[in-house]
Image (cartoon, rainbow, N blue to C red; front, side):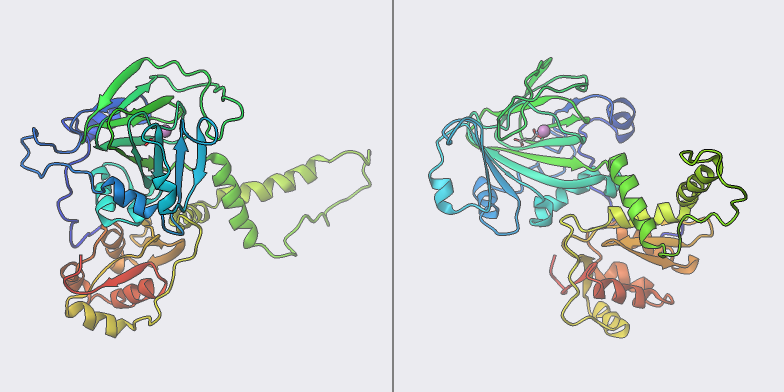
Length: 411
Ligand code: SIN
Ligand code: CO
């Protein structure tokens, strides 16, 4: 595909001295790995700025006061009972009345709330964007954590501030036993075989179902969990089947006008009937284009299931072109995920916010251009404004709430 303008030089992968190829071959979805100085730190000679926690503990607590932000407090001790789980939004009084130690605050989806946390994802460009879910950020004073558990997804645990002791096992857990009657799902059969203390910039990668237990060993421990997405087979089959079913009419139903004779046994579901049912299932599954389109729409749906918001004043194509000429840029709107695939005929299908946009070959370059970046400054867009259909596509994406305008000079 002719990508007219390559994405800007990406920041170093969050893999320290490990190359993306070595990480993918040896660890990815296979075994845990601790990577010291995964993000540049004072002693890295790359010349890159030192890694610093994008958020301070107070700022994280501030997010947990807001409506619509998913936050939790886990009190190992000092709550109404051991390992009490409380759900946000919280009040300042909630924080003032916490004990000095052994609790943790967790805030989900912080990449959507704080641009500096979203930028952390630029260090994970060795994986396709649709595979990354969100960044959860935790703060814990000494002794805080969520207990021994496993996650069903891969996770990159970046130490942002302070220190955390991790204990983990190497092999994924086959059958977990859960401690009964606890607010938080905690493993009863935790048998770690490694213990490490991570410092800022260090990272622990865990494949799915690897048991782990992180405990803060400082009074300012902040951990950034970059969580992966791995749709379950049940989610894929349910979702695709529902999408297929929505396309069908009432009259599309079992029919057997070809029946020739009364059945030998009225209790039997005969071979011809079974064949007809199997054909319905097979035809749906054999439609590769429909499967691919469903998947593109599925993985770009806004995370909270809320539809994207159209702007109050949607722009016309020529109005948008003028604004871009004057320096207006674009960026994915909050909650908007973009992805694409190329088709055999050179056309591309772009997905944004759960919608599909078909781009003919002459416009196909716009799909990677728009979905590879977090920011689309005016200078990236301007060279393409003369391409037939591009202004209309951009205006449509803004109108649908997938892209939003960024005034000149605003990051
Ligand atoms: C944490 O940050 O405290 C928990 C992260 C995890 O164990 O997945
Ligand atoms: Co975990």
